[in-house]
Length: 195
Image (cartoon, rainbow, N blue to C red; front, side, top):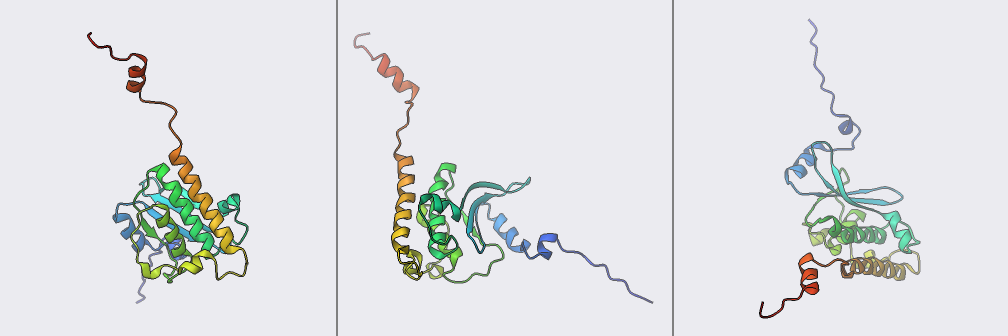
């Protein structure tokens, strides 16, 4: 008599090695937005994603190609560009009222000092509150680009970093054009004494 086994086919994204559903479930149970970091050979993507039953919603995102608009002419897939992309995301986050997040590195292995953690360091320096350990962060000289073969890497790094920081400060310092209605009324109709 032959025995037949019922085979359960796993989800497509699990079969393809794209999603670890046990890890995703733990991240979603935290109830906080996730800082999703994905890397490729040509760049790095950072997104702050919030869970929704209809589908995840992207609150704010940054890609390493955006650095080219700020004067970055070196590779967009190294540690300094990952840090700057994280810093750029951290400076965009207050516009969407993103304060606290948890890190989602997907199926990438957790390797000390790699591009993923350089991007995390940039996001934390940009103002996003993310729990992490200092042990996993890359060294400061690697973040600044001293290890790269390009001679002007450190100068470009500092210049682009100042543009990112200065850009966000300009947005915060810009005075609002409209005053509160009650202040306008008081200026137009000042209180008179004796009435």
